[in-house]
Image (cartoon, rainbow, N blue to C red; front, side):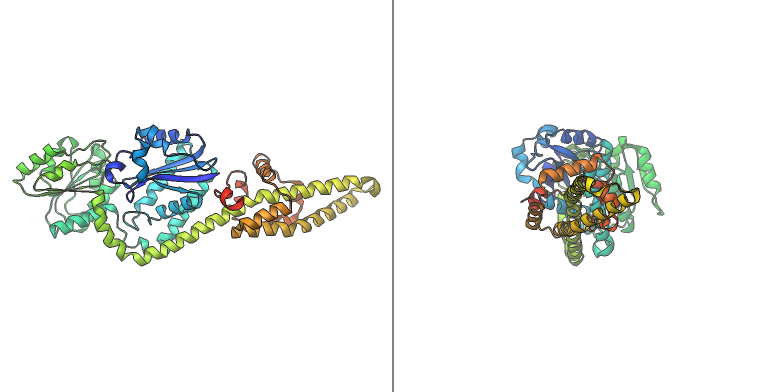
Length: 477
């Protein structure tokens, strides 16, 4: 099985392209089903945020052309998309996922939203039925690594979200937010974060609107301030906007809700006093043509990169520490995968030893004569113990080579002990379909228990389902 990750993000594609392939939460199940129907895809996940649309898939073999999803789902020419695509396989895909979840690949390093967004994408994929044991194991490991990065390094301290960067830009533009009227369009998490930062910066009147008035009302009630936000009916959106000095908009509208003709009306009503639009929605809520009007200044999510760069410098040391921690977690994940992956070879050795022991017992049955039940049990225990002791060194050697990622040594051991690829695959299938252990494993006591040494508790149950993604590259080269 191969792990593949492709997509676009804020580093590789402009917002004009990203908004064309943005996938809303309501569309996500259908998009996941479309992706899973592609030949070779067994499990999949899609992370779609304002900064990225990335596909993660467990495929039956390498080289599956996931980019075809964009052509099928969006009708976009692959050639137009290809220059902007990122593409990772196996270990590189794992590393990218871990870094993404830890916010090391975010526009603002350390922002907390991305981990929640990846968790939400995972929950939707799980509910849709496109996540199995392989991605389940991978994503849970990524979440644990991200949590460690946030708690054990300074990357999460004084964290800055895209919303707070937008507010900081507004403060720099005005010099002070005291007495300014701010209009929040959209009552989502991003708008709520922006509103809280605005209150901290001393903003005056805050207006809130949302297509669902109840959501806007609940958000307004959640602010502990002397002047709670005023809730505006969405139908009065454009009338209320002319009152605002700063408009922060973050809706999921498929088309711009503020256009050039609206801007002209705003300026007339405001007697040409300037307005600042900070558009943190993808697709954009504000038509770029608005920026051509004298007195109206529009900043979209890509414009926030300049402010984010300053925070990147401040967090340089914490980011370096987090990078080292994530790299160690990626290595730890692969070590666990290798330990799980080598178990079928160990099971194959145990089965072969048990078959040989039984054959010899049968061959010498006549020479042993009539044995009492107690005597036969003693002979059985003696022969089992001898086989266990004989197999212990090769089993330990296999596990050690797997932990160290020594593919050449694994190949040599497979050849030396005549454990073929077909035999290990058969062992995997047996493990998946026959939960009962072999007689040898049941009776081998301490030695049999040592066969699981080096793997996490409970990992053995994943033998038939969770394989090392890079097996072909690392263990069978």
